Length: 334
Image 1 (cartoon, rainbow, N blue to C red):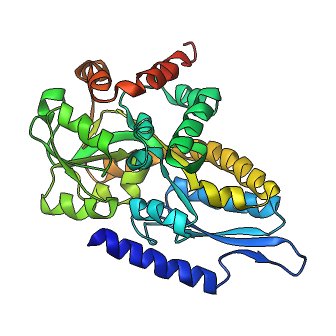
Image 2 (image 1 turned 135 degrees about the vertical axis):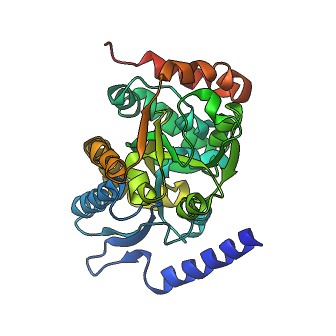
């Protein structure tokens, strides 16, 4: 029933778009003009949102105002999966979120959320701002029938909650909220947790009411969701360097004039780099919000957590091992 309702709403939104001149109109100058809707799951105070604003600004500049964007933060257009499904119907035109959300369309997208692939942010940049990142995005896009562009760091994920976790053994039986994405479910199942998939908008209430003991997200995302107000403990597992990317329906993207396509791709690259810069600059301040709220913060032995994941990829995602090795191989020398 939920899926049919989402499809009905998407159809209504599409009709509304058409009625309001949502895209592909011809201006008085004879040039095609587009007003496109962008979904973001993060709130308007999140650094990711600021990079989306920059993306919209750059595209508008590069197209002389012929391509503009309306930004919808905090999943106000619907949850990410529904918005991705709505791309082909023009209910939504751009989704700016983690690539692993595309795992419903192609298992290749799970590579984004494989734990313990990066040494640091420089390693992350070397991958996603280089040829390896280009290849992975292109492969994922081709496999899913989508256009996947640009990349920014969404944050380094930590665990927050109301039960202390200082070592891997503490995860056994822990009720942890995870995104509704396969690789996150399998990761925490592997470690022995009791996983509960929930949308981001449900995390605060789930922690507050004790439906879950913990959740995991990057510090800036946690603060954007006000989780410092309902989390007594933070465990710096640093298990996933989440990335965010711009996703459009491939057929629609390719129907746009070539110069607009180029402008959107160029802007996505610039905005992705800015996103990483902003997340890095914001992370310490976001962490301080938890300190000020009285949370106890644990730094853990990351080698212990890495060792606990031995064999995970080979058993669950053998087709991602090649990508995983490509990512390891581009690590900058210390």
